[in-house]
Image 1 (spheres, protein in one colour):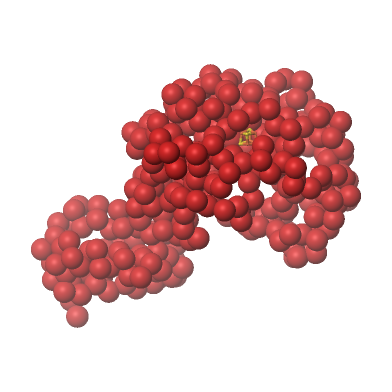
Image 2: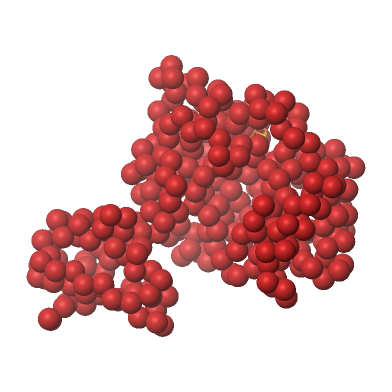
Length: 346
Ligand code: SF4
């Protein structure tokens, strides 16, 4: 397993701990069906994953062990402690700096938070999925909006960094409900957020609903649009979005079969590109460049591909909508994600 580089340049060492025997029935998850095929992960496997990842990380880097793949605090306590002890050995030797884990809001209480704190867990990511009561019910999540609010408050009171994972396009969901969820997440004020499009995965109840016409997934286009709006909302409230991409059904691997839904291998980049397009359009409006013959878009060098868009989508869109004869895109070292718009005189 390879380590991931976190946006603020520290390394994540993922250790996949499936929640075998999870008592819930989230309709998008195929855990019940695949549970017989899930390999048991114990101390030895966790060590092996960590050692493999550590060997790929430059010495002296900031690194974090991440227990992903299930509701960590839903597995038996003795097993949790076993894994946490392994992670603590790496912290004590100075090889890693911290621990993060993902879990459900209803698997958080003061007893649990007490021992997570003792074993140096730094970040807790809650699989929230929606903050709309009807969407939660239709998705059979088995927890309420209030459970999320209470768990989030406790996590922050204990001094952990809080992460929230939400999904877009669950049954009963609408763009307005997704934005409503994001606004409630802003009120909760986590440090980080992940946004996942809902995909129909093979052998799930959602697949049955999809095949019988009871569920219609969001299109790729509308999901990109919604996600772009959500990212803007979070960023304007200083909440870091660390992922927009494949869904976080805890026991579904990223290679699981996708039957339908807004799947795209470069989904995150499509969202970034849409955010760029929205900013450019806002600048065209603000500067009143609608009737210009040609424009120049200047941005950070690494953002040029986001500006252009996949298969030049953004440039073609701007050309068609505003009738520009020429659109020049230029990179500037000091700009990063900022965008400057001007009229091109040449
Ligand atoms: S998504 Fe998580 S909580 Fe829901 S059924 Fe799957 S493993 Fe259980």
